[in-house]
Image (cartoon, rainbow over all chains, first blue to last red; front, top):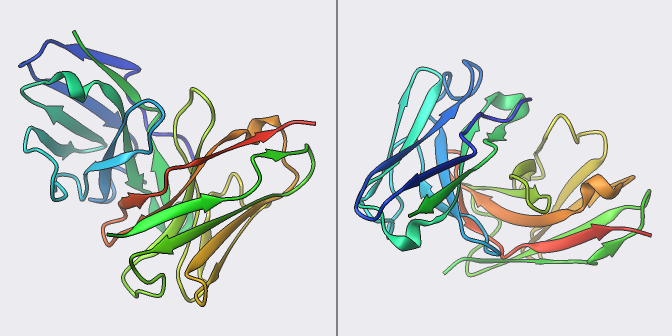
Length: 111
Length: 119
């Protein structure tokens, strides 16, 4: 069970958009529409931002959106704000034996 | 509002067993809609799923940890627990408990507890 592949870091200026990719295989990201994304500020627990590839939980701004194409899922944050600076993790269902696999995480810097 | 709270020793000696409990409040652990899971994060590193349990006791474990992990549930106390045996320094991490929803997402998390493996 290998971790999903995310860029180590991305950056953008306030108001801009950034996209974080999450690449897996046909056994996880490509095989199921169960991709979720988490935001984690330093010293805090992760917070669910996107689930089921593109659904937003109540209270998550619509600046956050998710998508998937083949074995790669993406999180896009538009209208970047300073408070968006955090680590972001993707997670995918990987079948009834492995169940869940996380990405290595991406540090978002708001310039 | 659902809340989860981890509890247990913050220091464990090498080769011993790490034991943590997650207490759920504001909702029932016996809900048929959810699994309950453990996730860990070594200092400065990413998240790793450890395993999940259903209120009936059905469990799923990360294959890489399966030989050392046991997750159990106590519905009378609205708690579930983690045991990780034969720990080494590599098991030093913040351990989180979380609820897993219908779409395989972890929608509620505990605050996390740091467990250090050291003699």
